[in-house]
Image (tube, rainbow, N blue to C red; front, side, top):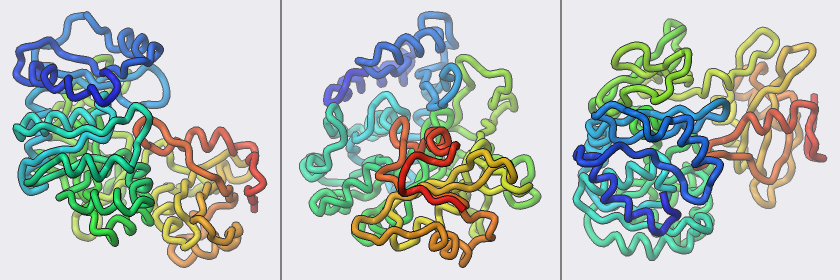
Length: 391
């Protein structure tokens, strides 16, 4: 996939695989020789593949060889159609994400299905919010949409003109992981129509919008669902037909279903609430703490602009809960005691961090996913910053 702004030339290539005329494609970012060699080898480019596969999209896993979700034209089109149905009809899309990620690919697929020409931001030098007003104006009249990740939205909210441009859109799909509450509240206050999405390459992109599955998508909770929480499994029309290189424990082993590594719960309205990945669970003192609910409360603290909760080894507890916090500019530094007292108003004391680190920014990977592994590696021996407090 050539670097933007030339990715729109790939629309014709996508059209060829969606209508079955051309051979399947593996999206690979140009200019990254190591990634190109890794994907070409791992996904067996050039070897025989089923006739009904349109794209093999690599997953964003952090360990081992990358897996490739085999997406059919039917799954990609079903996702695009269901998205337009949920949002209120087809429209013109702004491509503001890399076109080799499933979220960027789907912007192009939706444009093809809508018969509209997408407008593209130049991302070759990063996400420049000053380009948003011009790009939104180029979308013209009618329904207008874009897809962003939380870090992009947070950056746009710092620029009044970019914020106003996003507020003109009929919907801003927000994916790549949960967004900090201050970002969501800031967007709502500015009149930006944010739609929180959950999904992956294996589901043709986002398939649950604001907790509600798209038409044709099924969601269930497995393994412990009797307690209210369980592992999320997804079925339906947007599902990949499997992996190009399935692991020993194949998440597609049950026909028609994809067993994710995420835990979730249904709230009182029946909407899905994603609690986090199974491997993010913190086992502390014989109890389990999921980071996402703690982060949801912590992000409401008036001094917290962004935060991450994770576990590090502890000789007595097995693991101890740790928080890394990005402060609101100009806010006074909270102490660990302040943070624990604040969380105690809403959560059990077990969930409160025993260690606090004040950082300039949180590490992220891919198109904006929080990298808890990097935080764990950085602070598992007690931290390396003067802003770290232990208890």
